[in-house]
Length: 95
Image (spheres, one colour):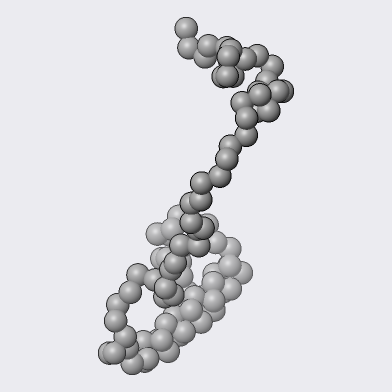
């Protein structure tokens, strides 16, 4: 499907794009090629293809949770600038 110059200008106006004459010619050719590709795709028989949201099956690739020992509080708080017992001490953010 070949687009006319007026159709390209109409599309540009709808998209609020300012085009030069060179842009109009370039986009007329590019948009026409895209529409021709869609015309080819419309010829494909898809009667036995179920509608899907994804083209490939998705799977989570997360590992299983495993219980592991944690670090001792002394090691974690060793470089803390301020601490209170086994916790980090921070300045109040809100009054």
